[in-house]
Length: 561
Image (cartoon, helix red, strand yellow):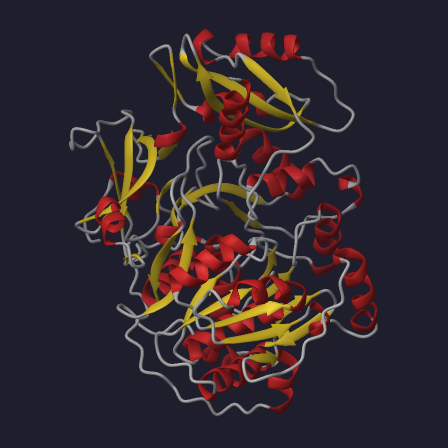
């Protein structure tokens, strides 16, 4: 994108407005990093460490095995794993063999799993042993031909590997015995007995898919977002340029965000592989485990989501731990409350900034600057080579400060939705992606999200943006988490309801909270109903599920009629 935009005036000198992207397969970067840093630690997992050379060796063995079992270029490989060494090795092994990765959430129930496997046409799946019964139950109804089974203990150091089966039995109430057959394969056997001689596959980075990433949206079945090698490489290289102080081969990245989510995949896994950073892999978010790990492993970078930072800030033992190694964090997946950002920066002395993106853009399109100006409440400015317009329903471009739909274009934008031309045509027009998010641009080129189109509350004719109300709630000292939604109202059409989780040891009543909101919001924006909860429903990456709360309300309404 050669044309200068208003936001380019704010770019630090070290960030280019345009980049010459590598037109190479994503997996080729593992080979380069293994050659440049063969003995450097690539990952740390619960005490186990692996070098880049070891990761590359195991990925090649897996690629050779895939091909020996009939995998051909373009075949889909489902990976149903938490953050663990196998998740990294499987991803790059599948790409080396010419496959297309289908990231599959380990929390999926059988119905969701069956749908995704059939829609993607996956012929291979790699899963944990405790997930094998779920896979087995749906397998006969899918296109699957091969299942590769691994376990957390496979990469634990002694004596943890001996103890883990007992923990697993207690936690999952099962002991899974995996026996090898013509269509069920044991991970350890593949790597112990396999060879590295896979056949390299000719890949066109701009045209060939690397990933089918399923995105839920708010209605209908999940859609498979088609991301090419070039899409993913470009977004990582944008990210690296944004973090221009990061040194190749020297950073350590906290890997709490799940790799089966495109945000964790890009900002932790793929960036670490491409630039020789060490990854700290955590299979699930546990606040105290994360605090202990930060103190011990000293990560310098920590991509996350607001609920992750909130969980750490509100842990009763927070002050016991030293988090000062953290220099840079980009928060995504949900709005970052200003209060959370300020508190986290005080605790770490690092920089936490808000970014923005979506699955269809690999995912990042905007962020605030890690070094330089930061605008609270803004998602920042577009990344290099990323153009953005705010469009009105009339088809005209909005004026400065006027709310419309955010649309983006750039090299990270998806090829389209898998086997879904109608949906593709609705959101992709002439290279521009309609995000479905309502927002505006200020006179300096900083962008702000008002809310998703479908989340706007229309009460008594007024448009109310949940984020604005949530920001006020987060500023209250007693509130740990809050989400606002529109629920049916016979008089106003919709009314504002706030769902609130209080900090430990704090008490506040509905009356007091209502008075606080009335002091800080226009009357029509003040929640009419408050519900206090112990926790809020969230996605695996920590995004609060507003739509689930709305659906619960609608269901309850029907039951009372």
